[in-house]
Image (cartoon, rainbow, N blue to C red; front, side):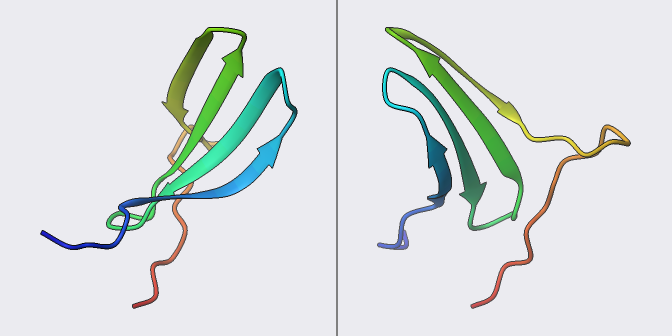
Length: 59
């Protein structure tokens, strides 16, 4: 198993109410994480056509 982290946080805003974008370094798929207090959720970030946003992966 690789020692590198699979997910990388590429964007963050807020303190008590946070919104973050995470990138899966294996697939390039972007995920939106939203947290308010003790509740949170994670979903794939979609473009205007409803397809997942994919970041190119460079080794």
